[in-house]
Image 1 (cartoon, rainbow over the protein chains, first blue to last red):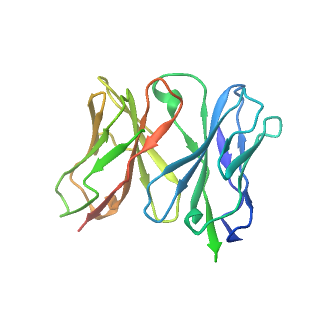
Image 2: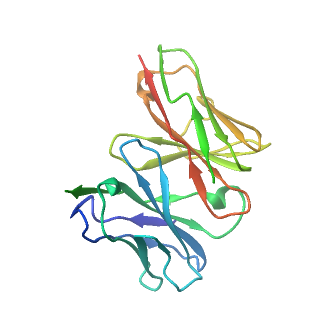
Length: 118
Length: 115
């Protein structure tokens, strides 16, 4: 079974600084997708960034980027120029690449609570 | 965009009554939707996979007769908590897999309180 591990229950960063959230996963699949979701105090889950395992290039979305190390099964999220609005719980998630029903199931990590200090 | 709505956002009910929560994908079709439960400061716990036009697939330990799921169209799934008890009080979140993509989009959640 696939597992996703977020080893940092809490992290904090100064506004405008950079922070990296770590995520490791375990799978026997060769093709899969990885995601970072953000859950602010409103509790609305928001997709931050996604990575396809067969693509070696790291995904980037504005101030958010990932460091995807497939051999190490590592998928960290870097937030640059942190803003107060980035404060939230961040979840790393995995799903296999197949299509249909249960293949779309996400396996989540336990989350990292990010605090941004002004 | 890819917007998912949930209704109601909050519901308070008496023990023994049933509550229905709706999950709609507003601007896309979703053959597969998911229902999660989330306790405070914890991750999302998958309850069931809702498949359009067929029976839902429940995760181990989730009572299918208590949590009834119906996915009658490509944009709507419903979760009915039957004979609710205080221990069913929780935050319920749905998500919808956007057909033709690899991404799930989440609803804003429903806070259920059973008195």
